[in-house]
Length: 342
Image (cartoon, rainbow, N blue to C red; front, top):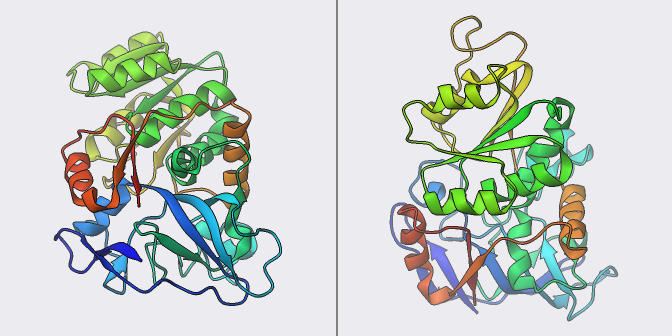
C-alpha cells in the first residue's frame, strides 16, 4: 500500500510503498477514506513537540474509512462498514485508561503518534474493534475531522459547562479547524453570547455565520479593552484559547471574570501566567484539555449524524500532495480543514 512517512524531522514526508498490515486477533484493518491534516502533525514534523517516535512513521490521527478486513474474534464490525476511528489509544492498564480517558494514557499509544502507524496511507491497522464508531449517514471522507477537529473542542466545551452562564459572554480565540467547531459547540451546548477572535477576516466571517455575536481582530492593540466593553466590564465567564501562544493566553486570562475558566485547547505552545491582582482575578480556573474520550467521539458523531452539528467546509487533497498541504497549513492558508485522501 502507499503511505506518507516521516523519515526525518524538519524534512518533507516521503510517499512510498509499504506492506499492507494483516489484522491479528481482535484487530481491524480500515481502508482510509480520509485523514484530516492536523496542526499537531506540523508540530511533530518540525520537532516543536518531542515524542519518542520510532521513525520512519506514518502520521495521521484523524481518520475515517471502511472496514477492509477483521481479525479473529472481531464481532462488532464487518467488512464494508463505514467508520470513524478513535485515535487516542492507550495501554488499557493505567489510571486514565481504566477510567475511560485513554487519550490521557500514561504511556500513549496514539494512532500515528506512537509505535502505531496513522492514516496518511491507504490502510490503517486498528488494535481494537471498540475504537471504531460506525457511521450510518455520513460520508467517511467528510467525517474524518470528527475524530479530532470536532472531538477536541467538544471535550473542552463540555468540561467548561459549569462555568458557562447565559448572563455572561464566552470568548473563543483562534478560529482554525478546532476553533470553528468550538464556536459550533458553544452555540449548541451553552446559552452564552460569543466573542470570537482571529487575525483572519475570512475566519471571522465564518464565525459570524456559525452564530458568534461579536467578532474582533486579534491584531487590534485595544483587544482587551474591547472585550471588556462588550462584557460591560464584567469579563467573560469562559475563555477558550485555540492558539496557545504567550500573547493569546495572556489575553484570555486578563478578560476572564472571577469564578470563570480559561481553557487552553490542544497541543499549542505558550505559557500561561496567572498572578492574582496583577493579571488575573481571584478564583479563575485554568485547564489544558487534550483530545477527547471514545464516549465523547460517539456523542460528537451522533450530533453530526442527526444534523445538530453541521460539518465544517472541508477541502480534499490526494495523498501524493500531502507536502503541499503541509506547507499551506504552515502559511495559514487553510480556512477550515484539509482531508488527505488516498
